[in-house]
Amino acid sequence: MSLDRRGLLLGAGGLLLGGCDRLSQSKPFQGFLDAGEGLTSRVQRLIIPRDALAPEFSAAEMSPVFRTNGNSMPASPAYAQLLAGNFANWSLVVDGLVTRPLALSLEQIRGLPARTQITRHDCVEGWSAIGQWTGVPLALLLKAAGLRSEARYIVFHCADDFGGTPYYESIDLIDAFHPQTILAWGMNGRPLEVGHGAPLRLRVERQLGYKQAKYVMRVEAVDRLSRIGRGKGGYWEDVAGYQWYAGI
Image 1 (tube, helix red, strand yellow):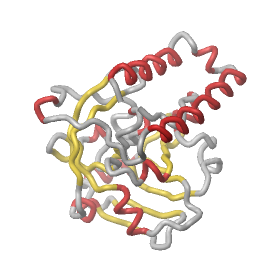
Image 2: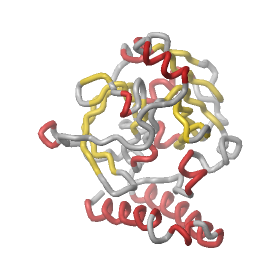
Image 3: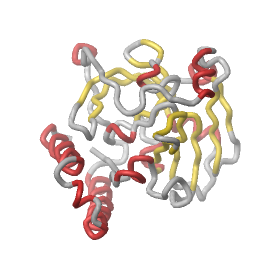
């Protein structure tokens, strides 16, 4: 992925958020975008190997400041109680179309084999930052849970919400089993901070920032996305028309 291409994608995102708001509300135009999304995902996966890695950087290239965006503190009393207890009573559920549902404590997750990677976060708002992430490969958890043959997507249910609407995101199995897709519990050599999604967040490095769900509480394997939220595969996809496939 070249910088020029990333810039083009980010610029396109900014265009949709700004002067093209009225167009994005148009059903014919949204249909055009949806068709383009499908074409983009098929072409990208045709020309780029499914295991191709996103660029990784050295420690010297890390950004001095990595801003937070979106929700920076879930408002629910349940999350506040977990935070007050330093997440000692927190657990991650892995269920849905699996043969062995899991419920893992944070301590158990931190004890699993981990991957550390220094990558660039590209936000659709037009900013980027380089940070170090440490976490368990999602593939390891999915293999432990045993995906059933009907499973096609992985959905991430989160502790935060916007005005009472729960936050969620989803990816397909190609990205779920990508070697750089991790559930991160560490950032820049320290435990993940609340503003960045403590205690656990998704890093799916070949997609734009809004796919990196924070405050992940449950990982659900499903055969379709139409039954979740408004059926578009994620909070921003449902409420703002963001494209489900945000590959870069």
